[in-house]
Image (cartoon, rainbow, N blue to C red; front, side, top):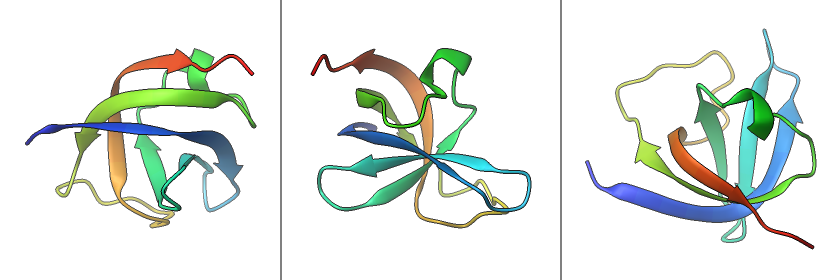
Length: 76
């Protein structure tokens, strides 16, 4: 599938074992799949490049699952 670019804010969602999410500037909340450790920071402003994974089931089910390929922090 095609690569997706999402800008937004990292949030921690306290569901089940916990999930890292990216609240996009478009209002969509994406659940991050295999979020790198240095991306796991609440409130971090980032631009993430990744792939939407329709084949991955999650516990939290808070939105589309985004597998992170690359990301960069947006300096405030």
